Amino acid sequence: MNLLSAGPAPAETVPIFPLGTVLYPGMRLPLRIFEQRYMDMAKACLKHDSAFGVCLIREGAEVGAPAVPEPVGCLARMDDWDMATLGVLQVTAKGLERFRLVATRTTPSGLILGDIERFSVEGEVDAPDLAPCAAFVRKVVAALGPARFAQPLRYDDASWVGFRVAEILPLRMEAKQKLLELTDPAARLEILHRFLRERNLLA
Image (cartoon, rainbow, N blue to C red; front, side, top):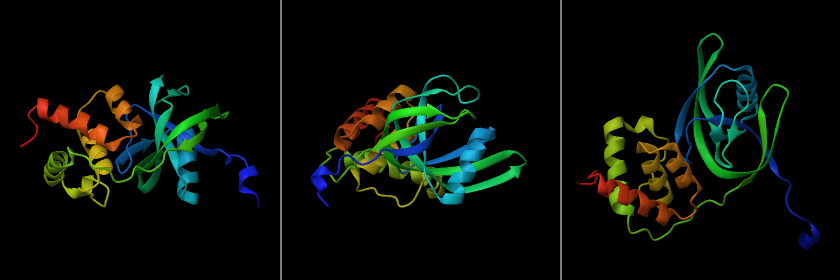
């Protein structure tokens, strides 16, 4: 087979769950699902152990008419679920790789399907702000308990630490979205380190 003439890989299609929050790689996200379109999505994902996409809402709301999602989101897989209340599915999802929406369409039920391109996984980089940011995350994990965070805890990984700081801090969702879209983990840590230092959140 001539790889040069094979053409681009076909786009990957996943269901999109627009939310009023930003999901980061390695983040645990509790979800309360009750709309039929998302109930059907969740059942299919659980049955096939498949991923869905979480995007911050740009326009619209979580409930009702399909919202307009931000073009960059994060794939998620359901770790566990429970239905203690009839008709309400409690799910804990874990963030995987980031993606960019190439195209979207809406099913008759109101579920958004997105053709996506995955971001490359961020590699190891020299990040001068890693140590103080990692120390901050360690303190928060110790205070909240490790069960609050997805395993493994990678304090020597600039990408993981940066996403955990962004997850923890009470930033505006627009700022959290920008941090998700950044592709340089050292630059992300530099921004977050400056925020922590300005608010005296570092030891």
